[in-house]
Image (cartoon, rainbow, N blue to C red; front, side):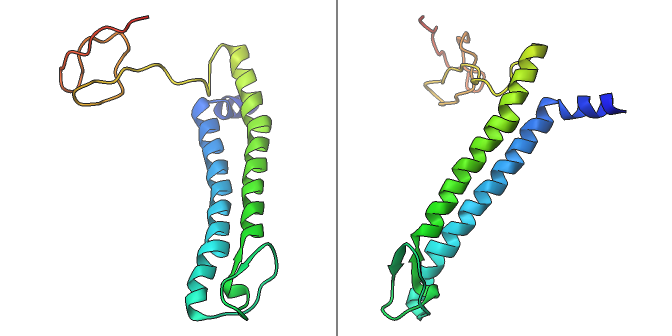
Length: 144
């Protein structure tokens, strides 16, 4: 039973989805901070509001939190995102890469090299290809 669970968790797509989900959650915090502390005060400045403390600017004299452009909270959200993603990388991605390397699989590596078609500009062609698979244009040989 535990072996099956381990095999399930060690599949590449499960880890990639987990890292993507964690990244999306961290990014959503960054977006929320941007909207709460940059966009909302700009909107509130057009309507009036109340005072707010912190690193930033009061957009309307005598206004409040609703018209305070709170850069401090946004900067801390950026710092949070960077720290959070560093923790995800060093706690999840690095150990996973190490385990997969011991098994003999390469994960989270550089993408395979590709060639671009000069005619249709598709960029998913095999580097050894001499014709485009999309428009059949001649693409020439790669030089080393």
